[in-house]
Every structure is written in C-alpha cells, then in structure tokens.
Length: 146
Image 1: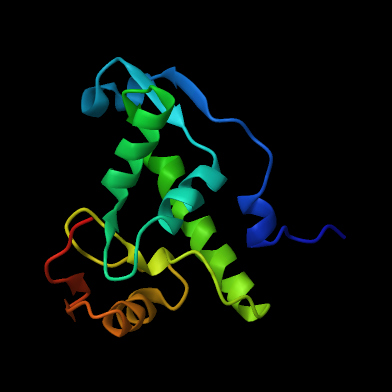
Image 2: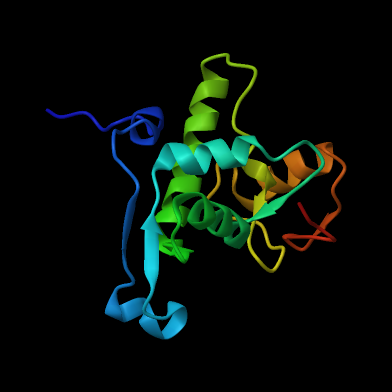
C-alpha cells in the first residue's frame, strides 16, 4: 500500500522552474507572452521574506517570481497550489517542534480576503494575523501592503 507524501515532501519535490508560452486558455487574461511555472520551494522562499507585521498578496508573489525568472507572468494556478503546500508544510514543521516556520498566514488574496484552504481556515489565519497586530473583519484584512 502506497502512503501519501507529506506536505514537506511535496514542497521539496525536485523540479526546475519552467518558462513556457502562455497556454491558449489563459491568453485572454494574460496575453501571448511567457509564463513561469514556479517551483514550490521558490514560492516558500518568497513567503519567508515577508516580515512580521507585513502582508503579501498572491499577485505580488507571482510578480516577484516572474521578474526573478525573466517571464512576463507566473501561473496563478500552480502558485496558489504551492502557497497551500508551503502552508501545510509549515504546520507539519510546527507539529514536529520547529520554532521557525514559513509565515504563510501573511499571504492574502488580492482583495484583502483570507484564504480558506490554509490550515485552520480563515479563523486560523485571522487569529495569527491579529497576534501580529493586523485588524481583520469578516474574513478580510483592513489595510495591507508589503
């Protein structure tokens, strides 16, 4: 019986970032230029750079990744998946007793709303953000920037 890979294993899965032509299904939204398919560890590394008291949007993460790799845009689907993997791996690390984990709770949607798929859901993310001094109401952060 095959066991499911841990979130940490998914995060550290060996893969290289790829710059590809934007797929036809996404060209209406992003044009016909180039798109980065990032590595999970690159997404995790960017989240780790967000200092306490600050926040980052998923769009800003994608912009920074694209700039770093010389692409025009970064795939929003894989980036969202990799943000979730980073969050779940961080919680695995916390359960294993690690003190310094990826501060995934500092990642929010572009409109300031919280991410329901994070460990603990919106309530868990709101609790962590409030501990860092952010004001959260109705699943949204009031005033944010990085």
